Length: 281
Image (cartoon, rainbow, N blue to C red):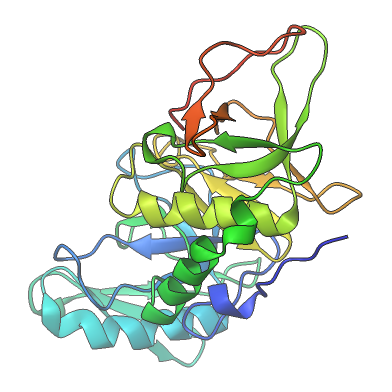
């Protein structure tokens, strides 16, 4: 059985990793392409505020990391970023012009600090760093991750960027149902990297995807602001492979022509299963 080549640490941010029930969150930056953006792990409350932003609940060590980060980025835009510090077990944040509004946040019954409506936080992915980008680029350049083994078919969730967006999968078919791509773990890694890197520039066309340990996490761009929404978690099957069997992430088969170029399949497969739209949610 193949294993993932990544570990939890490459996707950690601010020296912290995801704990059970946590997802990566990020604060809306004050400026486009702000170089100091960092993601933090948090439990997300079901209800959003202003119809868009999540209400995070932070572990003490994460809250301390948030304080350190806010105090670094505060000079970039003092009217946007709050100041923060700890006073014993009390998390204190200062917002508004010249940070004159004091907010005291006590430790909740769950052992976390509820930020409530302080800050425009949204569901995101791991911090984008140069080292992480270089690892992702190396993964996408790995030709072996694009070559099908016997019994596999090349599929894509981004038909406009073939052949580099084509990845091998075993196609699982069921009567009167859509076919389901099943990826080896190293291929699922590459698919996740493809989507995540393209999400940064085309968020409406590519989902935010990352690994939490061995679990593949899919953040839907248009649903993450809805009350009660949590990202889709895809655990490996008994063989360590990943079945992408939801409607939130669409793939289509591609065919390989004699000249070696990969093209989208022109017609639906036979035996009742269908080719899905190539436009991912």
